[in-house]
Length: 342
Image (cartoon, rainbow, N blue to C red; front, side):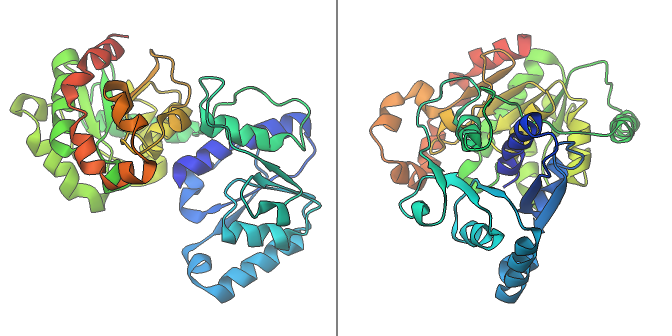
């Protein structure tokens, strides 16, 4: 996933700081490349394409290409069956991953994932950083993922927004109207009320983050909005590619909406965020760098902690729809108002 690839990229900065002459490679799904393009700490990318994923012969060719690299060390962040095979084929003497019941057979070093964060970096960051222990004597407490845009991309996106009749001297809000899946998407009617509230509080301009195949759901949110709000939503203004979306987001006042890759990318662009978590997602893992001011988030746990504490994760995921409905927009309007004011 895009958010995972972006978050894991912090490891390269830490490794380069201690081993400046090391050659560092990153194995990623090909569609996630835009969030790590131009990263100065990564020397080479190995892409898992859809063809590699869906063809055993192609995957074997890919494994052989890994073997040819003759790696000294491998950090396997996921420890899935496919990444286990990549690690085995690497021939590396140092093999690092998170602790699972079977990982001692494959890896030289394994680490148990923490359940309670020690900093506001969040568990997604902290658990990745501990994987550096066999390779780095000095591990920073927290490193923030960064996205590296070119000056040309920034200038081009600025002109695009100006040509689209957007006034960059006024507030501009990017709304993450849809999550990566239905069970990570705040109810559409609720989201419309949030957007109405944003406009009422700021008189700002509003962009929607969606891709063409999501246009029906995005349009549904738009139609739920009040008539006055609709006048200030630039529905047709969106990035045609992931890099275009990133460059447009660079010019926004803040990103508000569903937890997921878009929020993580906004943080990596140093854009303030207000995040609505799905009830079944562990907030402590992905509320990275939350400080109650620049980055704020809300979760069902904030309003009905007994439900989260007394329900197993599998049940939370199964009942996501009814649980989402419990997070009525009015419950967090005070927090959102303060965020907008800040």
